[in-house]
Image (cartoon, rainbow, N blue to C red; front, side, top):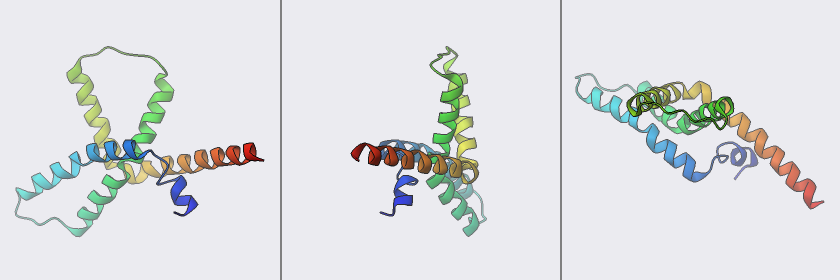
Length: 126
């Protein structure tokens, strides 16, 4: 695998990527279900958007969770479960719908993070 691809697209653990990918499939599934109730066919452009957003969603979610983790730190809030689930669903939808814009930030971060780790590893070997 090319080093750039390994440091970016391969930068998330497979477990994390697959978990987020499965959650990200909720939105294209809902869209396609609603679309099937209409007489209009789904356009090629929409199918491409659904595919790209679904593939990039785990990286978008990684950016969101990293930012929220930095802001929140180790704080814990106790709130109503319905409010929390609704908020989570909205943030998931926003991360999925805007994945094409948010994911590149995560991919750049992963590239620089893994490059730095590789440089430290190479320095330790010398």
